[in-house]
Image (tube, rainbow, N blue to C red; front, side, top):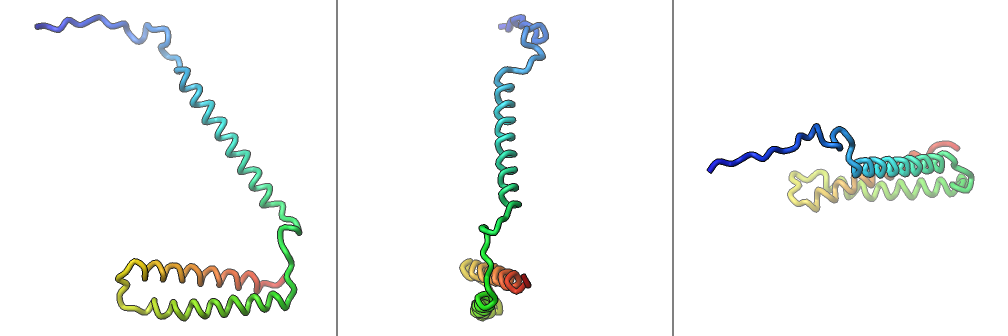
Length: 122
């Protein structure tokens, strides 16, 4: 049997043709509102980070600073000793060894940064 085609109304002749659906306007306004909120939060964070006051940090005296640097260097020596034992292995077969090595590298790097920061004058 032959299919009889129903005449469909042309989309161009509909009243809503060319108009943005209402739900899209709502989605667009939601996105705009969220964008404004995130921009406001970012501005607040940047203002807080830029306004460092004396209450945000504590000035260390020279003796305490030297003791802290010495303790950090000793800690660095400890970690470096165990790191040297791991890094000279011929093959790293287990995932645990690889993770341990990466963790020690990160800790050594952080200790070096802390020592450098405390070694600066002022």
